[in-house]
Amino acid sequence: MALESAEFRVRQAGEWLGLDDGLIETIIAPRRVLEVSIPFRRDDGTRDHLVGWRVHHNTTRGPAKGGIRFHPGVTRDEVVALAIAMSLKTALMNLPLGGAKGGVAVDPKSLSLRELERMTRRYVSELIPFLGPDKDVPAPDVGTNAQVMAWVLDQYSASVGYIVPGVVTGKPIELGGSLGRESATGRGVVEAAALAAEKIGMSFDGARIAIQGYGQVGAWAARLAHARAAKIVAVADVGGAIANSNGLDISLIDRKLREGAKSVVETGAGEVIGKGIDGSSALFAVDCDIVMPCALGDAVDERIASQIKAKLVVEGANGPLTPKADEVLADRGVIVVPDVYANAGGVTCSYLEQCQNFAHLSWDEDEVNEKVVSLMRSAFFRLHSFSVEQKLPYRLAASVLGLKTIADSHRMRGLHP
Image (cartoon, rainbow, N blue to C red; front, side, top):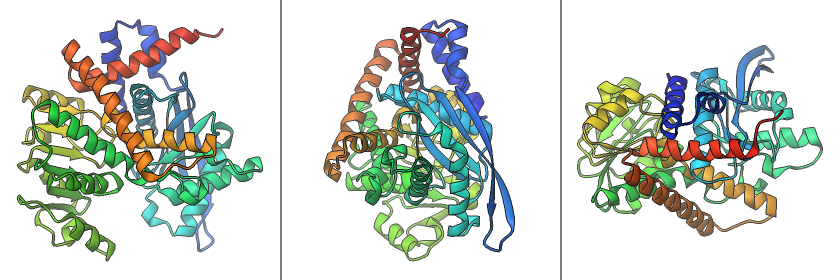
């Protein structure tokens, strides 16, 4: 489903641009797809085996850029779809990068820390010929974090014989990571929501927001939106969903999760409106102004889309709405701010981390945050202006702008031989 959706959106944009079929197919096809076997030792000495992938979708404009995902549901097609989205995202944001993605079909919570490290290092060792600051620069994604990126950095550096901080982003500050990276994607989502709300005459101050997913992206979106006087009326995670029409106490949720609560439903911060993964979708029916799906792809189908009461949907996750859901929301007049723009704060900050690594600089957190917001705002004004001029929804406008940048680059470079 994810790959079909990604290809559909590229073809739709390509047809709008009037690109010939040959160029559309060239852009859709990934440059390379590497599938690797990952044998590793369990703590009890037994040998286990996993499968992983790394996809370079498009490298016409610069090094491949994209996260590494550890999740039991990872498949080849999902990784290709996510890499396509990264190509469009970097092009839309006008970053000199291509699109990539990586993934291993594993539940990282099922591994001990030592097993996770051994598995990560073995996976990276299979990718080394394809990695490098000028080739492919991974970053964190679902199921990975700064510690995993530190292992990626060390494994690559050990293979070449010297430290290469620019081979990966989202790494610890002590190893050349950037301040502000942890909050960057959530910050971008909130900035996108505030800018889009302004264009439809909605005040972000006091806006009622429901957020699906309370991980790295969703939690930061909640904190930052709350700091801007928005009211977080519902949040959800794999354990279920909670709501409070007067606004949830975000600091209480964070404190309870730090103290050991396994889900937002165990924090006592609001009324439990659904339990488990299926129950978490109850969040979408909550009366609110803005919905932010910040969990996994294909979370909102046409059935769930018909229940959404918000006027604005801002995609914090990658591909959370299916094409059918898009149609339902469009028919109902709901504005959708697409993932290729809305969650681009993460790759934007990753780009800034690369810049710091190349120049051997370290910017303070305020400077990094200001640059992320500035680039998000510039991209939004381009997107909104194009959307209004051409009478296109944000999704198609974003895909067209990103695809045009990629297609123009293909034409200028030519085709060898």
